[in-house]
Length: 228
Image 1 (cartoon, rainbow, N blue to C red):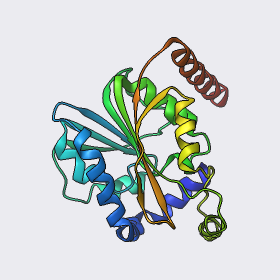
Image 2: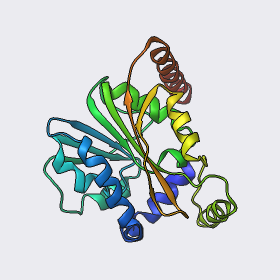
Image 3: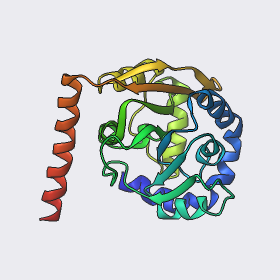
Image 4: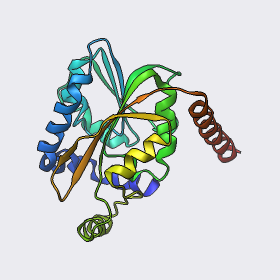
């Protein structure tokens, strides 16, 4: 995780230009998400980058809190012209400062696979989501083909690490195991870089609540040990 943080801090000034190559895919993501966004919704975005989703989608909702763990990435994001409904801040997706059930939706785009412990971010998303709230998690799903391995090898040369290489089915199973109810999962992008635009809801039950509480407790205990 720290390795990728350093990478993003270095790369942030060039990120928006680099992501221009993926503009068509992000337009597809926006088109897929927009029907689910309502004017009375408060949305939290984790790993927002320079605002590829938050800038075009924030006018659709009441408020959009866009966060990233890279201060430099947030600095670049703030340079864009954006809606008054949109606010950028630096936050750690695994230790959010927001209260329980604060948001109607959480967005985490193309970030779960580059997190060492994505289950911590998903547990935090669950905590801050209202019951029935939406999780939008568009994620690249290269799978384990030869072309995918080659692509990841080239990415590794730049210092960028991918910790989880999922197929679409594996990604859906990963979220389902953590209590999220999958609603839609269209595949977008190209065959070389397929993206699963996963949309799920927080449907609480006793077993899921206990699991998420255990993850949260482990995170808090780990933080206390580090402080000591």
